[in-house]
Length: 129
Image (cartoon, rainbow, N blue to C red):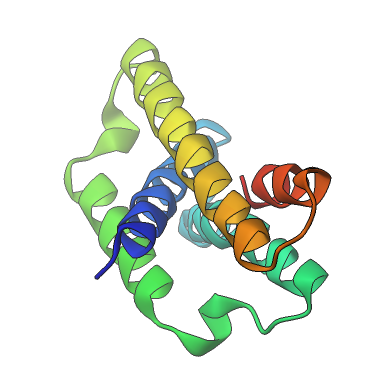
């Protein structure tokens, strides 16, 4: 496993947690919370891959789905939904920041690998995050 894959896993877990916390805060049912977590964790990468003309990684690899599932099970197991609002806000801020950093890096790496100009690298990082 290389550094890019590790960063991608960290970003996926962080954004799955972030989406979970948003779903809980909005009082969504379990399906809504799962959808919020999945879209947050994989949506940017799918958009990036569509823009660069490749099949999204979540269609060809199961890593993201496993990471999302484990993250949701851990969040539910630790009963994060029962945590006080102030503590939830701190966890959300931490998870969202970590996810933004991780996915900005992976998106920019895709742009560098495709040898696009600096604007393309920045935009792919931005869209992925």
